[in-house]
Structures are given as structure tokens and as C-alpha cells.
Image 1 (cartoon, rainbow, N blue to C red):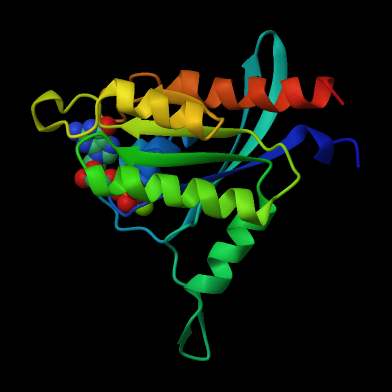
Image 2: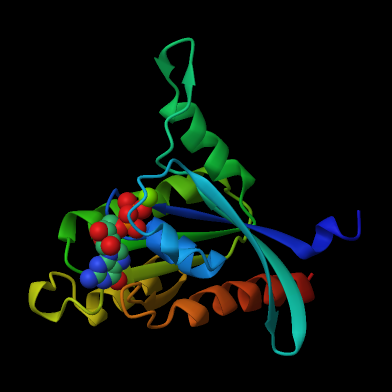
Amino acid sequence: SDSEDHVFKVILLGEHGVGKSSLARIFGGVEDLHDVEEAGNTYDRSVVVDGEEACLLVFDIWEQPVLVWFQDNTHWLHNQCMKMGDAYVIVYSVTDKASFEKASELRIQLRRARQSEDIPIILVGNKSDLVRSREVSVEEGRACAVVFDCKFIETSAALHHNVKDLFEGIVRQIRLRKDSK
Ligand code: GDP
Ligand code: MG
């Protein structure tokens, strides 16, 4: 339907602890749930970008274990995530080199899952406020994004730095692709 055309599904990917839930909660405007150990969540919000409204449905479900008949269905969940998104946010922590390497792996997995599609992907280096424990430089992040042909931004969920820009950037990326079709 027409209204569904304006709802964009955005999936957050990345290692445990990099800040996916923190970024999603800021987007959803529900930060008071700060210390709640929640399961996966979705956040539905409309944002006005460049004078035009867009509705984003942000999925923070990458780590939610789905138990079916006592079997761990993480593999199934991850496959679903790779299939269902209109756009992807791949998050790593600038204080955790391993999470940066994992981000590259996820980018490759995503490319494999959505081969001929040109889906917006944003690589996000979160925790930019933790200056003294930084393990991944801005240059490394930017270079990785060039190699993987995606956008790049550094954020700090703790300071709310660049979080708005991140989600606005996603909307712009989705629109650019729609307009070129
Ligand atoms: P997730 O496992 O990817 O969902 O990560 P969370 O959002 O649960 O964050 C993991 C931990 O990192 C929590 O203690 C957060 O408060 C903290 N955290 C998240 N983002 C930032 C950030 O930008 N700066 C700092 N200093 N801490 C952060
Ligand atoms: Mg989380």
C-alpha cells in the first residue's frame, strides 16, 4: 500500500556491547529505560528530513534469542535480519578492535545475502567520547567504509553526538536510491 511505502525498515547489526540498543533508544526517545536489561526491540518514529516526513521502523533484534522448541534459533534470526531490511546500520565500538573486524564480516555477509541489491548501509563507529580507550581511528573507519562502499559516521550515544545525523543520513540514502529508480 501507499502508506507502507513510507515506512522504512532499518536493522541494527553489530557485536554485543557496541551500543546498538543505546542508539536505538535515543532514536525512539525512550532512554529512561537505560539500565533495563531488555530483549530485542523495535522503535517506530517519523522524522522530518529536508522538509519531508519519513517513517522509520528501527529493529534492535540482532541479539534477541528466539527459542523454538528449546533450540537456539539465532542462525534463523540472523538470516531474517539480513533479508528484511530496507537499510542497515552496522555498529562497532571505536574502543574495541574486534567489534570493528566483526563489522567487516557483517558487511560481507550482508552483501552475500542481498547480492544484486543496492541497499543503504551505514558503518557506525560508536563511543567516540571514550578518547583514551580508542582502538580504531577515524581514518580506519572511513577507509573501511570506502572499501565496503557504504557511508560512515562516528557517534557517541553517551553524548548524543551525531545520533540524529545518523538516522537522517539513512533517510537520505533511502531517498537517493528511490529517486534514481
Ligand atoms: P548493545 O549490546 O550493542 O545493544 O550495546 P548497549 O547499547 O547495550 O551498550 C553497551 C554498553 O556501552 C552500555 O553500558 C552503554 O551504556 C555503553 N555505551 C553505549 N554507547 C556508548 C557511548 O557512545 N559512549 C560510552 N561511553 N558508552 C556507551
Ligand atoms: Mg542491545
